Amino acid sequence: MLWFALILVGIGAMQWGSQRVCALLGELRKHWGIAETGGGALLGLATASPEISVNIASVALGWPDIGLGTALGSNVPALPLIFVISYVSTRWHRRRAVAEHRQNPDSAPPPPMPQVKEQAVWLQMLPYLFVVALLAALTLTPGWEGLQPLDGLILALVCAAYMVRALRAPGERVPCQSPGRKTLAALPGFAAIAAGALVAVLASRQLNQALGISDLVGGLFITGFLCALPESFSAWRLSRSGRATSAVSAAVADGIYSLTLAMLPLAIVGAAVGNVGLYALNLGFLGAVLLGYMALNRRVVVGEARSSLLTPARVGVFAAGYCAYVVVAVRLIA
Image (tube, rainbow, N blue to C red):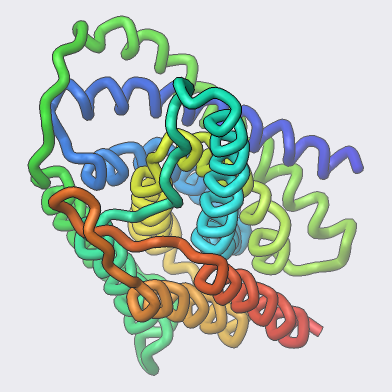
């Protein structure tokens, strides 16, 4: 219980720090006139900072499997959780708004059901799918097993190309004050992320040993899953305010950085993938979720833009898929 509590403390410190950095990047997004989907790519740098920091700390301490498991474990549940949370959040607040609007017609109209702009598919989903496929090819192809320095260089170049493409999406510049104060306010956030990563990795190692599980399994189902929860539940606030596109875009950007930038420390030291079957299952599930979203994507016209609605059937498919993933993963571990 002590080590588990310390993991929570470390993750809490990293999330607190990433929120400070998010505030700074949010101001920069508006100041630079970056589109909502491009803003998700920018904010993803902050939300992915815990995974990146955990990987650096795990490599420095000689336990790279913790970092690898955390990077994958925070990615796998993220999109299913965000789809479910976005739908439930909007549905719940819409019902309340409808009831209030009936009692008071002058009140604000009920918000629409969660919609994800078509732009998010092309700017976020397809690059994410490409990164997952590329990582699988680099680490699972016979003769290329594991992560090597060349793999890290390739992933870094792909990450840079994704950032340039996403940030160049047209957006409206919002007049705002200089982000100088936000920059100073973000400095403690960087320190909290670094300290939190060190505490989380040290506690994870002790907890894994106490439970008798491998570092990869502990990173996947304990540290990584706990890292994904705060980021996923931010979708509740974003969806409630009609920003489902931001919620999905930030999660996808987080995933892309977690599978590219966060892999650099592992690639430098030539880390192995450990349990190949479990590793392949995680990459396969990520690819299936992305392909499933694009296959189920139903475009609807909203003004002059096209969006996709998150319906109960679509949300249920992703939730059921994650449950099936857990069952298969448990069998592989056993």
